[in-house]
Image (cartoon, rainbow, N blue to C red):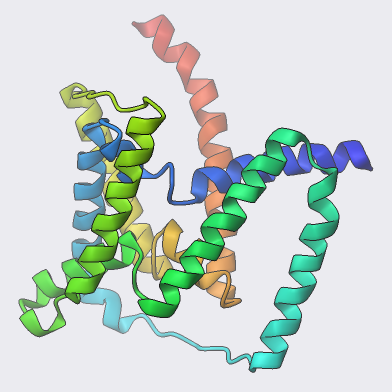
Length: 237
């Protein structure tokens, strides 16, 4: 049982760590990977493509009272307190980092509920499409994202991870296409991975839970397909 929990923790921690916003396109862009700018542009294009249809997507809100939500979160926290001591040292550090990210994100959420980078891109694309200056995001949101970028840059410089990489045209096109798919998915899911993890999941949104489960499945399938394709690409080259 302990071995099973350890393997499960290895996979789940690594998967969620890839999903969280720290190693995202923004962080890799700030770290010097300029191809990530194509990903961000594609993300914005993806939002613009489906923006006209966003109003036709119906939403059903499920209300939780404060005590009910508190009970759910307490039970989940208790489960984590029981499981985390059984994890390996490396995974304990990963889960600690994720918990700290979540705690700090909750503090920012109290100040600005729509602070996430994907939420900012979403609202920028909506304002551009509608040509409505009144719907343009508040300046504080730009300030929060700028602070996030500065923090990422300081982290990259301190850890000596900053390195300019321009990338070839094919990589930029691949990242642009990937960004467009991410943007389309973000519209359908109602937000990017950062919004789902840092806002949707803590609010016990069933839609966010379904989105994260789908992201995990997509990451798993994507890695498997990549492993199958790599030998073919190498032999072709």
